[in-house]
Image 1 (tube, one colour):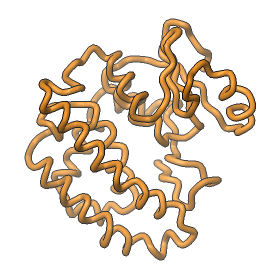
Image 2: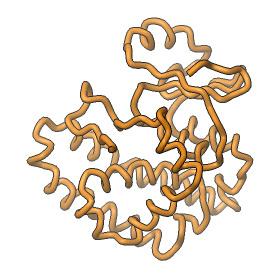
Image 3: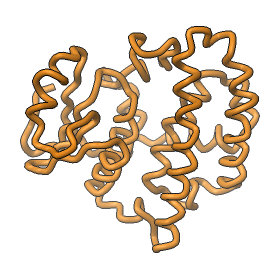
Image 4: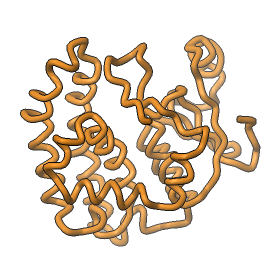
Length: 222
């Protein structure tokens, strides 16, 4: 997609990965963006990374005119600022801290998730890992969500971070994920958003969560 000076530009590999939450928050609020997708590692590491005007050049990045933000959660948060929905950062100081608490808790499971999808024997170890390591994590999140529509009771940026990971566990094993009906309803609540639906149906929506160059299980969507 051609880059436009008056649009946000998100740079990332040509799969969903860690740029996905930022794109979801923009899609949810019907804010368009341009993309710089990398399939050639040399284009990023050899050309664009050294030229990126940031003290912390990395993927994903988001450009907004002369402003360049990198690091996954910072990119998500910057995208959230562009929606005009200030509640995404919490309606009060305590809620803002609770968002950070949830972020830290969810992020703690990432090493387990990455270890699983990169395991050469993924099919053999999947169910054991899900039941022994992922299930306690989902049970705590399910209890925290309860009957609320969103984790804070209203939509915040953490919902897009949580959605990305939870949807991968659902995709990995729908039968396993069905043990937590409130989390299933939570995913469907976000997926039913008009902007999210339009993005998922568009040609620009990446079908893979991660390239098969890096992982055994790619999180491919139909």
